[in-house]
Figure 1 (cartoon, chains in turn red, cyan):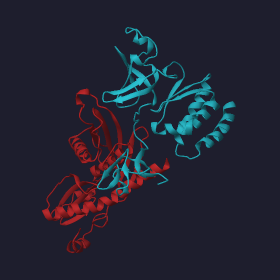
Figure 2 (cartoon, each protein chain N blue to C red; figure 1 turned 45 degrees about the vertical axis):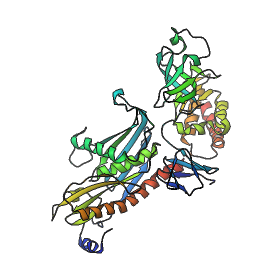
Figure 3 (tube, chains in turn blue, purple; figure 1 turned 90 degrees about the vertical axis):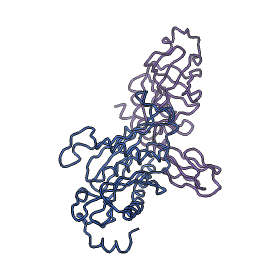
Figure 4 (cartoon, chains in turn cyan, green; figure 1 turned 30 degrees about the vertical axis):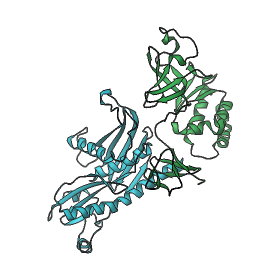
Length: 242
Length: 225
């Protein structure tokens, strides 16, 4: 909850794209976009677009990577070479393998794949267009795609990036805001929450006080409800068609 | 609850002590919560979720179509589109087989219609001891989404018998989404394939069997021209 004082100060604060501090970009969510995958989804925050495809559960290959005790979740995050203005070199990079692992950890607490011994569930996330918050869009898309693939889950997860620009907390950063240099500069905090409001993933890039971090988490909880509604709507639309 | 509704994982289906959690659901703090995406259904206070998508989940008694992947000393490993490979034991073949001549019965790459005999920790056991099961020698195999198989079969087989009658083909529908079609002419087989794919595509429609009757009338003429 934002206190009255911070609300007042944030009123004067202008974001580069004219949004309110706690306003997300327009959310677009679609399910079942990849016919050959077992489950698939697209999630977009404005012009940040991520698609996710889920394959499996299937037998883990190579055999030595199999876990006979429980199923494995394997995520792969990739940014398309054309997703940013300056072409990026295709293929895995330090950044993409880190985000793959982060996505895996963000989703692990909700997927119930213990009974799929020696099997693997593959999640492939591709970012078609990037304007910051790509990992959040990717996690949101992956959660929908996993549900669509019929994987048992405790709940969906919602991910949102909260930022601190100078002293102001804002939701859903864009690239321009990520590079904020005025005052205290920019702090980027991507947060993933489960339905119960528990944090399954949090990262912090920058400086922030304890008090403001708590405020940021509260803001993420508030915003995750909007994302949940979008995810729910997309999944139900596809279900009713059948 | 008469009509089914679409639920997503984590959604509360019912609240209170009265209901029992069935397949695809879980009880948490007196609430029945869906753990899978699908249609929620309640029957005599038992709540379950029928999956709408995802991979094929094998069940005992299902007739499936698979491809022989390996020949071992006492049976065959068969790929039936499941994470677990299925095993067809030598004992489950309805004739005497010499242990050195396993390949004479089923070779690697053969397509087999089999029934799931048991599912245990080690995997899936198959049998071909019943009528209509065994190797497929001719005809064609097509693949559809396994979640749409019930629509292709129809209520008490109404849809599949309609297709069989109109196309004069022999058809076996595997629960895993593989369908075998065999007719006298290749044109009949292709026509049956077209009909089945049409059903799978339109699987969300109600009154689909009647719709298919019209579809056959329409397409029969085109085919004859």
